[in-house]
Length: 122
Image (cartoon, rainbow, N blue to C red; front, side, top):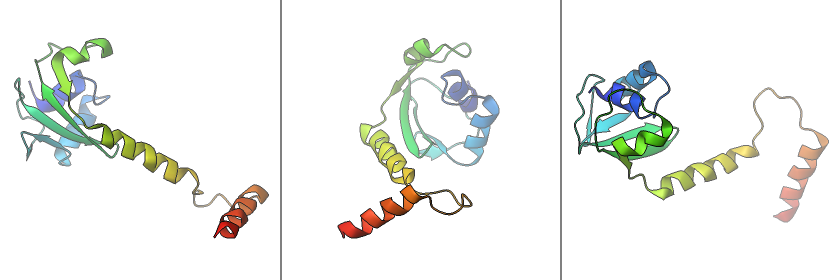
């Protein structure tokens, strides 16, 4: 089975075309080499894919006949992603919470008070 179809079948990507684009961008590696979307996947292959600033690592157990339900995904792959990758993403989310988006206008009174409190602590 093709790598783009496999990643779509085990629900890492919502559509097959998104999986194909990820392969073309070089975000997917099979056995530590960047692959094209047409690369065949076999059991015991090790896949690394970068998605949402997390490098997922998985091992292929079996090839699904078609797209499978979320409960059945673990039959076809073993997820060996380290937990530190998910913790780093959580920290990144918290660091972005405070920043205001560009073009949102002047700071509100609450924003100004928060800024003043921040400078008073130093």
